Length: 415
Image (cartoon, rainbow, N blue to C red):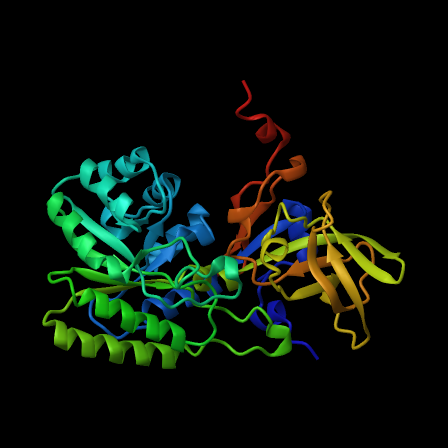
């Protein structure tokens, strides 16, 4: 029988799914504070090196309350836009706790970060030159392509030969020339190999490559190893977790050995965005239709790809739970069904031809592991209202942390 995540973790606390939807509307993003804090602690303590710091990537989930919790648990942050910098500062992060991991940004966006004393990572020679013109004599960070990529889908592999990210290793001399031309001090280098790796070896190998690059730059203050740590999206099939203890041990050995040769102790950072928030989030919705087209069964819900786009965009898997009278449907009798949303697109699919219990109209549905790249990629497509977000606190009680959209929100911005 499948493993049911919300049951094992008491995910909904003191509440029942139907109570939450009745109070906050359907669909609804639900986050569990205890799980979030546990994942933060795991990342904060992954590597046993003095000064090690995990940088939470806000693009995974930018809810202000979740950002505050991540900072309370000791995580610093990466930002990918001025808007993300703005939110991080509002959540209490100090400028020195933020790294602007810029990609193809304008002079205005760079200046926004410079004016707020936020370090900027430049991932091309042209962006480094732009930064030098805007901030001569400043402190610089360069993102390198270590030549090793990993990830669950080609669209999220961010290193190797087929990616837009990073400066290739053979351009190091040109990087040094630009630094000298604008009197820039290189204080850090960084990388990111991709998203959702479940085996640590590619990551460890990429770190070795990055440290080899770092050795060519004396007087660095830090090396940011990037991230991409995966979570088991297929828990109901018994998928195993990434072995954090083994990965952390191997990373610590590699880093300590390198520092002995480098001759000075520098800070080590990494960017575990998804890992921190994915499992703390579930997406609740309602089954409105069960129908057959030919011999194909469709379960129609109010969770369109405007609410959760990952399955439509990346063919991503999310475990599904159905609730009837607030109990999980656990029948051993299943049938192949395709779970779809309410968007006027054929590709509006949450799960395709999956063996599922016999859901009925009026049942509730839970999409697991929806905390990362869920609400942050949501939209008003079809002029649908984005859902509310709530937090199940440590005491088990629900708290609204972002209200549901209203029709007035759809009119905002028109002149």
